[in-house]
Image (cartoon, rainbow, N blue to C red; front, side, top):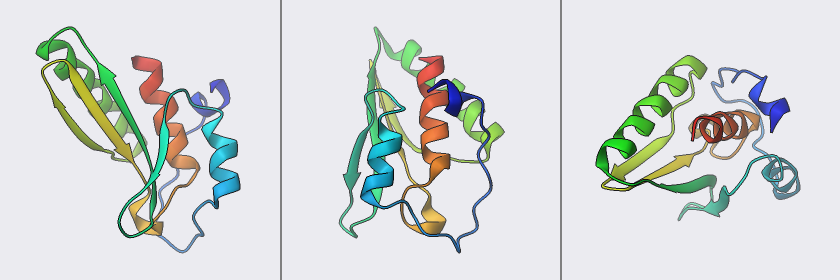
Length: 112
């Protein structure tokens, strides 16, 4: 994970091939507890749920995730409420996963 923490997300406008399943599994080993899933369009994404003691802790965490996301220029889908936050990460421009997704996941884990 340390290696990913030291990297910066690179803007992606498309035109690159998303990771295949073997590359996804290689990178998945570098982040802790992120599940790899496919949506109804067969597009891979990362998903992780975080738990907290109350609403304000969830909200504080989400605010920190927002700051990291803005800094990296890579924005996850976020849902949260009392005692939980759920983060979904994918690279929409390529309809799949790239190194950026794992960089962001590592940085989110680092603030948790």
